[in-house]
Amino acid sequence: MTNPTVATRYAQSLIELAQERGQLDQIKADVDSILAMGKNRDFALLLSSPVVNPSKKQAILSQLLDKAGVDKLVRLYVKLLIDKGREVDMLGILKEFNEQYKKIKHISTVKLTSAAPLSADTLAAVRQQLIASGKTESKIDMETRIDPDLIGGFVLEFDGQVYDASVAHKLKNIKSELSKPNLYVNKITD
Image (tube, rainbow, N blue to C red; front, side):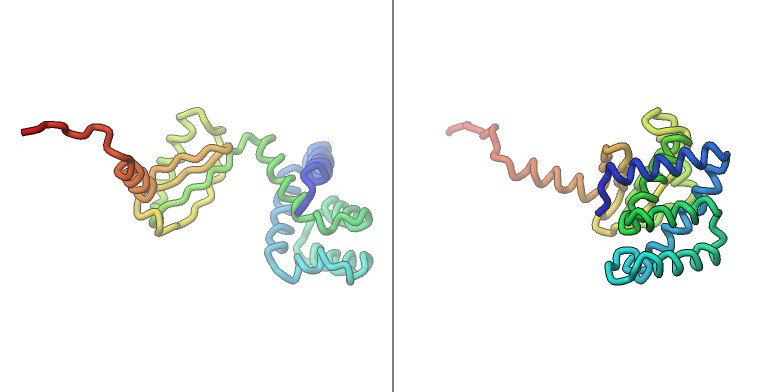
């Protein structure tokens, strides 16, 4: 787990360099490429391995990044992380870079979990409703998930808030209400 302070500082330095050079979107694309590589178990193990020496890690990463067409600035940045012994934190730093990028570009991340796959029209309608509500930025990065346990409906998560409109949630609330003792007992006697 990456130290949040370390991730913030290192990500901020890359953001500032990218902005200074007018390459923020290009650097973002390269960061996304490296994060995609990070989903590979062997890549993640290489970064965290204390057995592989830093020069060997640098050589391997240099080849991988060259093949991926990663910008020279990002390659130098990765080299710097390895030189500073921060390769273990690299993926966490790059995820933080993405979070800072979204703040700069006014992009909200919304997680939408539904019981069944939603059509493109439905997703567009949800996106429009969120923008119209003013609770999100004008640009939305929507992550979708399918969870059949919801039975129906959906769950929205953004900015630390959860809006649960699932059938499973409503059934749980009904069960909770029905399990409470009845305070209104009919006391009619014969």
